[in-house]
Image (tube, rainbow, N blue to C red):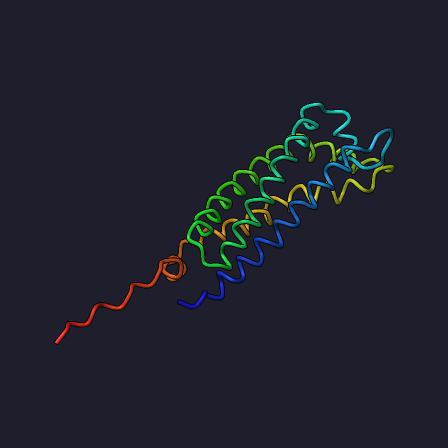
Length: 172
């Protein structure tokens, strides 16, 4: 059977988002490396709130896991491997739970400080932080939900099943 277009699209997107997850790990590491005074509200929160700093450090192995899951499943989807479809669904569930955790953490630690800082003249950069904290959770749910929905569609499931061999012809 020919690979359905959505499988190709999700295979490529999984690889692209996997590379982005790896980039995010390096961005997180560079953010953690910032020492001293910073006008960046996230850096201030990392230095001032140990629980948030611990969360940020925990996202590093989670990002590496996302990278591995996405790239492996993306390559597998492009090869029509059944395990890749199941791995994509598993990643979708993991990503939804991760987005929920990020939303809770952002709501608890980031949003209140960003909103407080918004009302101070010296911290104009807090407005984008507050917007990102809110919008990130909304947009973060789109891909994993779409991935799960598409990977469970009948025609997609059928594409991953090997085609049945033709029946033997009766001998004369």
